Length: 494
Image (cartoon, rainbow, N blue to C red; front, side, top):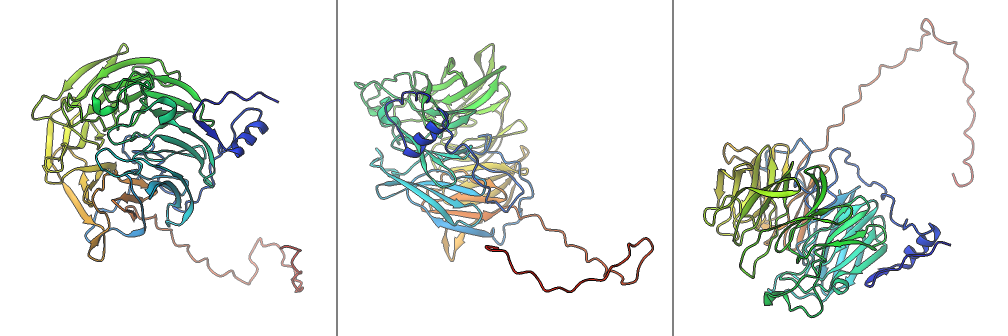
């Protein structure tokens, strides 16, 4: 029998996983096969993680409805508990992570009907420092028949997507000494090949808390785990965690992990964890956060925040970043709070502004920072790109369809989803929309709604074949008389 590797402190394995490990001679096989596909809508693509399959907020689906004057068809809706976690969708399953009472809850539903398939819960006692929601912030991550959930209190769990069986879990906060951040854990991990790359940001045991302004990092800004076993593979970065989520991109000929941490951008070798560079970028104000995910275009990286310095475009060459342009102290071009801007054909589209009253939807040239247009009055919003348009969700539940053009702000159509006179999406609707196989998923304070943004393709009508002639035709095989026997009885069990 192969010897099992030592399991790091804080990792819990289920009995089922241990048995599968022994049977596989040390290979963690449980959950490694994709779950059966439940989809009936075959056009389009999955949305298996935060901001979509490429973590850039862009969908390749086409054929969206452009007239919402009669609303959008609501396919299903469900009540959800506390939290700001966006749903994720793969192989006909939608996963939503929330909190009910003192339990964090991961739920799998049929993505087309909302039928609950399974639920798994664990106790949580997280209390927010600023009285915001006590539920999860990070989105579920679906990969290789597994779904990963990273709780607001710092518990990381891996479940089998098909039935919810817990495969492994790590108490990240306890294992790595994480001091509670302003709003708890809020970054969504990313899968890269056989690794689950997780923002951690731990501290030594004697470090003061975040509100002291003197919290000390301990080299665990990022921890990469074996995605099948939960064993640590590497740790990198003397940084604290933020509310941005990591990316993996090939930049300057090198495959890098990128994490916009509390103090700035951390770049590291995605496979081995060696530090590539660190670029400081954050507000001087203590009570400030970096929350938008970096936007990468070729060898260029755009960072944005809303508490101080605003936006900056970097270009990486020779392993080092240089500033192409950066926002001035005033009249900043793109200062996003938590909403990640979308890049399309050289233009950044995003919600710029820290507070609801000063937020504007903008189009900004990536290469220069020039503002092409700005639309005030929409309050803070999140957005995705699909079929030449921006699908924009306002924090009070308004939904707008805006043409993705730098020429002008062109509102194509808009709607508010309602049940009777009551809007379905209540403030705070802070999650970016999710689009998978034509269905648009929108989450508000206490409700998740699925609407049909793209109608399914019409099935062509089958042409009726002419009735066959009873008269023999030239070249026909000779017709034999048919025996009219009674049908055979069914076989046992048939």
